[in-house]
Length: 166
Image (cartoon, rainbow, N blue to C red):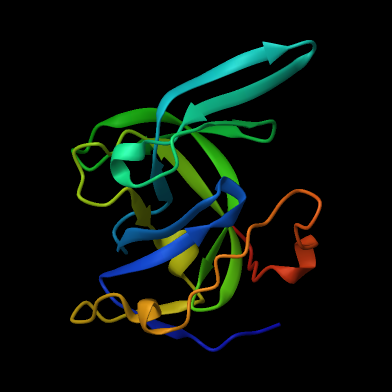
């Protein structure tokens, strides 16, 4: 289903229901290619013949303090805010904003020194949002529904607002 472009401000709030993390303050950054999420202790582990990615969400940034394990991930090289290239892992998860569900990619980064635990980049913004930097927290004016999404109740892929992630 095609949605009209939504106006988003310089900051906002999102939910990450698959990570059980809700009402998360985010920074909108059209200068960043990819979105990123703050986490720590990122490591690849082997269980049997499977390579898994484990990382911890940081309760000091408002996340539930828990360890997340995913089996679908990739590696990429990104240029950080200081201009230095670094290897990061990338996961896909669903976000909820403005009542929309969007499956998107996040790089896993140490954002402890940053004010916002999540950065929304161009890949997520393109084709969905128009940025008005004079505005803030526009989605927060809408009712919040913190419905938990489990693997048993997770919507089918076609239920997500998912333009190509190129």
